[in-house]
Image: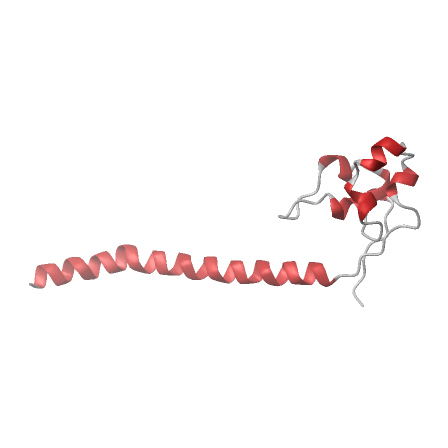
Length: 106
């Protein structure tokens, strides 16, 4: 009986504690990530004066298929941003994105 209890205690020390600590760290990081996402959504985004399709001189045919035209008050790079926050490579080098005003906290 003592051998079984010693084995179970050793198993708890060897596996249980590291798994519990890892789960706690994961939960805390997940909560922190959710808080940062809420803060990012709360930042006011002020689009540039002209819409991107005017700045880039897009044709009427290209504008018809563009998702940004349907949301003119949202900056185009925000429209094309993936759900996980990653922007398209094309947006990073675009003149519309590079010349956009930086959002400030109020």
